[in-house]
Length: 239
Length: 122
Image (cartoon, rainbow over all chains, first blue to last red; front, side, top):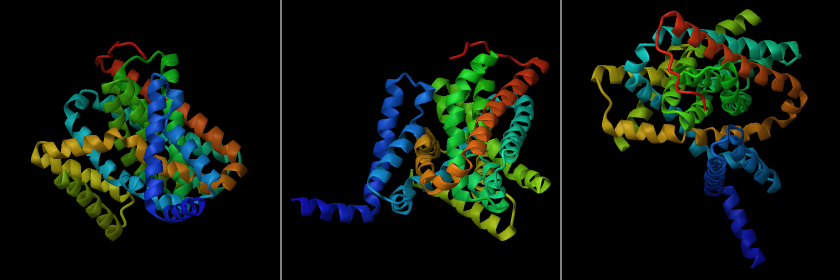
């Protein structure tokens, strides 16, 4: 009986089925917890799912390579999902047109702040160039950030982690920070969440308000475009 | 749904190919996004199946970040060595970016006398 379980485990741990299933299960559990807690931003579902999975992988002695063989199918969808951003961007273009100038000015200010403040603080605290280059594109969505990082001499896989941490942090902080500032306009609130915290901020914004979510999605798309041009210029200037 | 998924992948494929051929300084998926926008603008509308497929993908956007997040396992040594710089950079930068973006956008909207909805904060 025990031997049979060992055989099954040996079979499962080498194929993609197990870790793909576990990734989805961890996310479903995290989403359930987040909803049960009344969408409390501190119980971010990405954060909970990552903690669950890291604990499980460590406990079973499974390496990231093995895990990723299953999880790559989920990760791959980030590419098509980036293209899919064109759809809300196009369909809300009418609504967006009215505030296009404030949006673009805020985008430029926010995108520069995101890169310069992160790289500046880390450089002051003595981070290595590889870490700085990996950190620079952390506010844009994963596939774009990884592409930028690769181009400027960062570590794309480290960038991916920093992007996720930024997203989780931004999704947790946006609501309290914006309340403190007394900003009540959903367009501005959503836009700020999308510039600072890409897809994870956008997912959070959609939970709070449809308008905020739409503007966060637009911010994520535009910030991806702008940062892809901006970071190589700023990094050259830093060197 | 299959046509829509093919369309999304096709845009990404063209994007990746063009970026590699021309050495453009943008990632492939970004060029794919621009291509899709251009396609929708030319077509003057979104095909229903594309709207559903894109909606499903974007609804579960959070899930798609989980595998990359688990990648933290690979970088534990570097994160332990540089944790203070990284934690401070992420925290300061996240707050600064939220504040600057929201404040600039509200100031610009007021300057241009555009509506500022007072729906109340949540």
